[in-house]
Length: 257
Image (tube, rainbow, N blue to C red; front, side):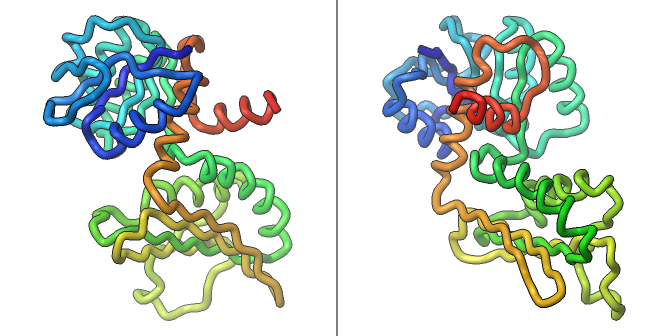
């Protein structure tokens, strides 16, 4: 049984993960960290991770960038593996992540969904075959009307995965209204849609002569990200120091089948 600390336990994702873990025989939450204490949990909750004296195998983090510095210091000092799901980190914090990964296992990913991370792998295989055959590549992402960044980090991760498979020879085009000209061969168009309560939808289009191939992932709830974080925590517990991502979790799952 993997023992986990839930960092950001009283936020939306913290509560999603807490409920998911209740149904998982391979992991349990032994402590939570959150400045807000107005939620009743079945485990002890500390307002500061520095005060947490509960033994654990891994930390799952879904908090905010302001809380990450203390988290990384704690995990580095205790050599405690951490699944880092908080986004929007500064360059200094990313450098700290790299530093801490030399002391303990750190798993960081642009998107925690198992489906998205499997898609990242599939897209590389598709790009290597379709792009040389003359297929154009376009990406459309959709999110709720409260999301402030565009394109999404996941959209960029998908584009990066395709571009990496093609030797990073392609350029990204975000707005075709600024220039009136024919589409270039080596470009990836990225479009963002914002509206309603869309949790997350990403579509990668390979458009060729007389045929179109589409890869699409739709998230219907935040639970898909929580499920990925739980699987990542079970994978990371006991791992050697280093920087990991969800592709390692996907690869491990396929090897165990």
